[in-house]
Length: 139
Image (cartoon, rainbow, N blue to C red; front, top):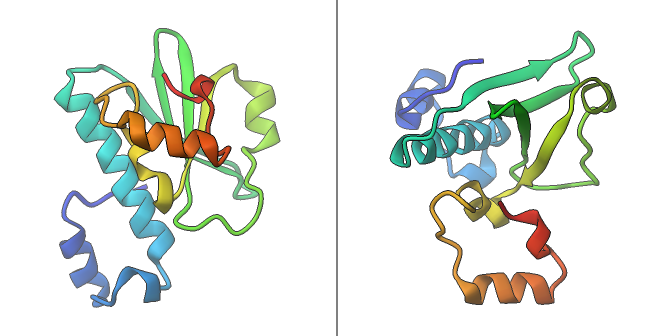
């Protein structure tokens, strides 16, 4: 996969500067943004992670795999969740996963949870009241 540090350059290459909600490639742009945010967080905190992605010939995919301390944390990035999203069964059976995280546009702050400590107690409280997350979901 190729990710652009400058998404404006990416937009220029595909000649599309439309608002994100009107783009056909919004999923790819969102994934690009999320991967870069994880990499920036690692750099900011001097964290050493091995970074991978995984895809089968059948197009089953894990968007981001972070390996450290012998364990895997995996991420799926969806701009908008349309249906229940699951991680590929073949991957989950083949590898021991410490944590699996789904990030959508409404919860992008989870990219930094446990690393930057940017989530406020107020936000956590409201998310818990809506039943979106529990304390166990955080690092």
